[in-house]
Image 1 (cartoon, one colour):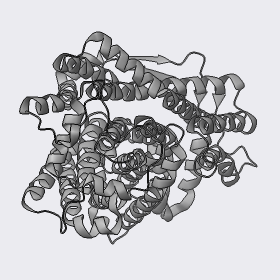
Image 2 (tube, one colour):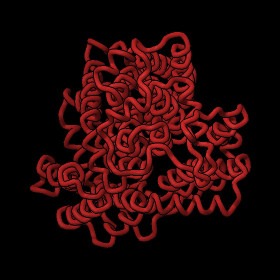
Image 3 (cartoon, helix red, strand yellow):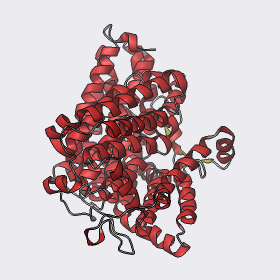
Image 4 (cartoon, one colour):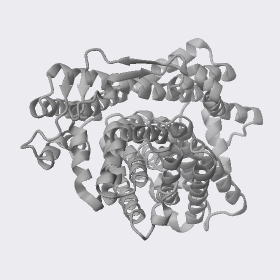
Amino acid sequence: MYQQVLDPVAHSLAWSSLVAAVPLLVLFVLLGVFRLRAWVASLIALVVALIVAIGIYSMPVGQALLATTEGAAFGFFPILWIVINAIWVYNMTVATGHFDVLRRSFTSVSDDRRIQAIIIAFSFGALIEALAGFGTPVAVTSVMLMALGFSPLKSAVLALTANTAPVAFGAMATPILTLGTVTGINSDTLGAMVGRQTPILAVFVPLVLVFIVDGMRGLRETWVFAIVCGLTFGVAQYVTSNFVSVPLADVVASLLSVAALVAIVRVWRPMTSPVTAAALAAEDPDGEPGRPAVAETEAGRGDDPDGVAVADSRAEVAKAYAPYAIIIGVFVICQIGPVKELLDQATQTVGWPGLHLRNAAGKELSSVAFKLNWFTTPGTQMLVAGLITMLVLRVGAGRALRAYGATLNQLKWAILTVMAVLGLAFVMNASGQTVTLGTWMAGAGGLFALISPVLGWLGVAVTGSDTSSNSLFGALQVTAAGQADLNATLMAASNSSGGVLGKMISPQNLAIAAAAVGLDNHEGDIFRRVVGWSALFLAGICLLSWLQSTGVLSWMVP
């Protein structure tokens, strides 16, 4: 049995926090400065976390190693289980040539790559986030962007940057429902508060995507389209989360945003002639090694054989969209009350063998319980969608198995990285390192409203999940709010809103994005491209949280 100690260094939270932060600093420095491969950096950081846990926090060696194994197992199921099956579905569409048809269909909406980036990375990615979450939208949209002609690096950066505003309501609002459970605050109230923070972020995300694609020229020429999409998404997310249904916030917002963007594209073009894929490709500085920008099929079919454009029939276009319609259909059906309850009957919760942990107050930690939600996990539902896709696209069992094997080979380094990062996260959580950091930050008094989102950001950067961050710091946010005479609902919601900005720098998500676009071992390059946007957005959410705690914007708090 191990009981956490929060101030093992000279009985000082400040000094203990400096030591507790070392594993994270090592991880990000190795990635961003020394450009080590993600799996190498993650394993080194894991070793450092174990040294701190055992040597400084006096955690028994056995308990520390068991926490590592639990984290690695959680990294594979449910997280990697989702990503593997999502990429498998994509690889089947590539092998059959249907992904080329889908790409041409998106091009027919607009051949301006800046608008394509908004539609796919932001709107479509938000829909996938709403239904699945846990890295799935990054995996799916990054390969879709690459197939449209974006470089591998830019595809990954766009997918990660776009996966921000929808995250708090992702997987049918699982992060907010979890936050309600750990804080005791009504989840509808929490959802309403988050729905008064992240919609503001949503207005700016499409503008940033346009800037990433085409710099200031892109902003000058397509800012109207970006604003229309972001504003529509934000308003819809606010209205749905506050007055309709918290779990449906992202579903409604994503569908309405793409509808608004398609509508304006049909009646209004950018100020200048559209920037075609070829034009921007010639200027694209991101030509790092990776898979080809245009996916090739097993049959070798290209988009423009002999320079002649391909005209796809309605039936071919329908088949190209079918896998994504199937995914949406399967996820929606599985969210229906009676169906979800039936599937949930197979869920098992087991204690991790040999792991016995208590927090500083002496209460047993819930993290020792491992949840095996066999049928309600998005990974299994994605597998079912893949099996149905096999039938619709007439993919034989042998071809599907070869695609699955290729997927596992493609993701081998991402699998190692994610399992190492989750092992690191679980060691830090189990030993008390993460709580030490959070408790120290909670001592900021009235200024805690300014740094509250940083706590959520830190939790997601470590675990890769807004749900996990809310589980980790939700109750701490409420306690700190009581000590500083701040609104508990606001502080809890700020944890989730700030957390969404940690997704793009989480080593887990970096590994998923890199593997999806064929940039294994280039996670550091991706990290350097997104860390600035993560910090900038975080500063904005911190300022918003602080203003909402004062008389300036307190009217926004429900």
